[in-house]
Image (cartoon, rainbow, N blue to C red):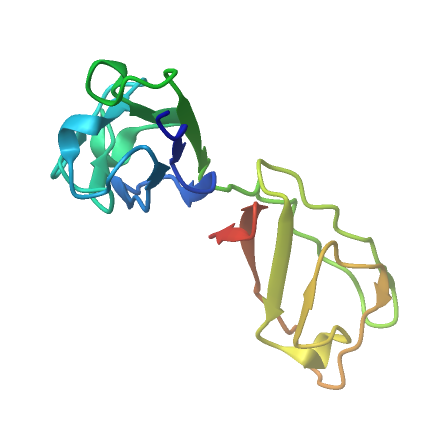
Amino acid sequence: VANTATVYAGPDQFVCFGTSSVQLAGQVGGAIRPNQHNEWDWIALSGGSFQNGNSLTTLYNFPNGGNTSGQLTVRLQSNVDEVGCPYTYDDMVITIIPTPAVNDPTDQIVCNGASVSSVIFTGTATSYTWTNNNTAIGLGSNGSGNIPSFTSTNNTNNPITATITVTPANSQGGTNCL
């Protein structure tokens, strides 16, 4: 009686747009021997290639290199003809997280002591952080999320300016893409 074949392609992965390959960490067991490539196969269901298809820990190269978007699937499967046990497979999904973007909010010009309108960031990001290069306007040096309304300050006799720099980020599956 033969053992049942077991295969594990590895955990699903999340990568940032611009990534062109991922490291695989497949596992086989039961009736399949890891060092016998004829008993198992990697299959690139979404296209692409493997750096060394005879290795369980090979690199998977994306079909469009760093310009690949969406999701890709690779499969590790038992080779039924060699093992003689029921065919089995495991898929790993690679999700490519899009590059985040932020829409440039409208500049605001206000007088000393006036209320500055809150800034609601929009774009393709899941989160935003910001820095302020001039805290003399009455706004802190940095923050995350939207900028709340605040009272402007100017303790000089001349106009002052601040530049708020926003960094958008997309996060998914424990991966943070800037």
